[in-house]
Image (tube, rainbow, N blue to C red; front, side):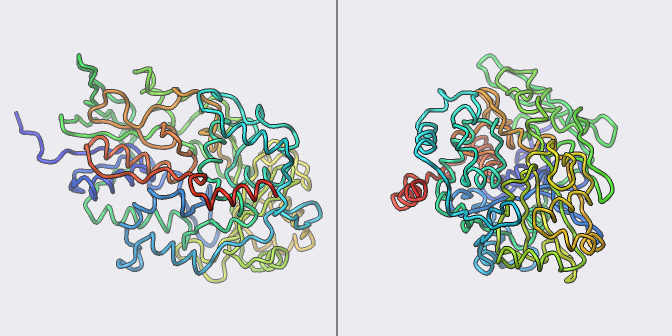
Length: 529
């Protein structure tokens, strides 16, 4: 019989930002040696949904993230400790602060109408009934709202306003999504009301968030001894329950490059299990091919949660989130441009230099298309003569206004044609197409965390009686916080580590704009304008 290790070992299932953050907190705040921490990831790269890859022949990001000072307190706490790859004396947090000050966001073309007309986005268009309906949603408790949808709380006029066009595309809400989640977003991001038309509250990373956040964080963890294992899928978890209700993970069952394996956990060992995936079964197209819509859960992103949920009635209901692909899918696309022609024309139209604007939404687009032009370079190693643009469409099954086909059936070249039509720049279509690569990405589950749900569909970060395990990711329940944010994953990791280790360290509070009189006045002024 061998003695238990001096320090517990920690096994983190999944290599996304939640697991990386948990590893960081285990070391920084919990005192665990990095060599005792194992991150188990099926894919050959870490970062989960925070990806960015490619080269001059074609860059791609599946999504983009809005960061801002007030809400992202746990993320900032983490990144204060992580050095950048270019200067170990500068933290990733400080780099973001410096870059955002140098390139502040001040969108001048937040909404674009028919004929490429720049709309007055400062006119939110809310009437008295809209404001009353919004107020009613805010004052109702979640227990009363339940699993009802957004469109059950607002009249048709609200959904035609400039305010809703900007809010929904900033955060990717559909009318059929959870009213509870919208309420949480209103309460968490209400400070954005007065600046929704400029998105001046946005804070940006120097490069895409994979290169600016994930790579430095992984490098820091690697230097501290954390062990990254790729090609490993956790397929099952053995749990034991004692008479007093205490539950423990005793074994992790693995598929390691096609071969079965397992880790047996000692009494002091810990397991952190990421549940579900918003980017599961993402499929890529190219200039000449439309991306496939995968409906049959091929990559295993949901299987572990399904297996766990069958073991205990308080481990959540994954089917509430992955059960309706047609209500959770949308499609993004990345343009790689080998000529500045298109960006020069967009700059003339919008009045924004690359990196100073924000989402430009084509309000009357059948696809509800939005695009953003980042500061160059946006990818590590991106040559000076190469530029990028990212965008997405919320209504992928509607026929486009210029190509006459649903977005889901369009090649990258056809997506470009639709974009140029909305920009009023079809006259340069052939020249742009000759020097542009478009990679569209279909994401079946990208807004699945917004699905209407009940209070028990997501499990708590630390379930009842859990002595050595916790759940991570977007499909756990953190009261009052908002899913579909990096902050949610990092906050969950903080709760998991501090809770299991019993650390007496304060977790940053949930920001509420209405608790600040100045912010509340700004919200009221914007809502009544």
